Image 1: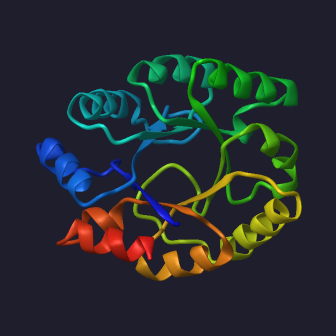
Image 2 (image 1 turned 90 degrees about the horizontal axis):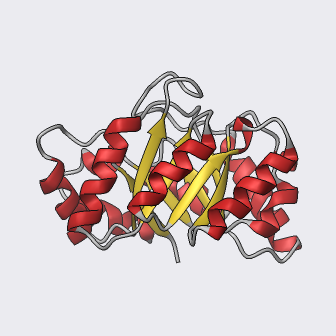
Length: 219
């Protein structure tokens, strides 16, 4: 079963409440929260995403899928735990030491939250393998993180496929999430490759009918 996590990064200002309610009615599975600090990536969405998350928590029961693109992971985790997310995903590249990664995985779990680990397009899959038995999800970026509306990198299809093969061969129970340039065309590629959670923002938010495109993405 494929799930859809709608990125709210580019929700139109002044239409937040209307958009969030329409997305819930259209049966998105998660609200995807793109938290950027202006350091790990150029854009800074930190305060905006915390505000949106807090608001969603008040009006919706849908789970929050928090994606941290930040250097100071611990501080961001502590702040976003306040909105009781379903899962917090941090970037492998934000850490220099393996021990720090293991400690962060345990810390998030100890706070009754699922944990995900994300890798950028240029990061080799092998770098994340040893952490997979301890996380709930791996997020494979299919564009360079930092802004919405980018074009899907075609070489990422093989990366997702290789990752799925490794997961199956090692009997791992883990969600495979993809994020970046996901629309009705690229969704077919990544689903065939093995992804089971699709992050999509622009394609959904620009559609006339949210439910129609979300249903199509889930097929």
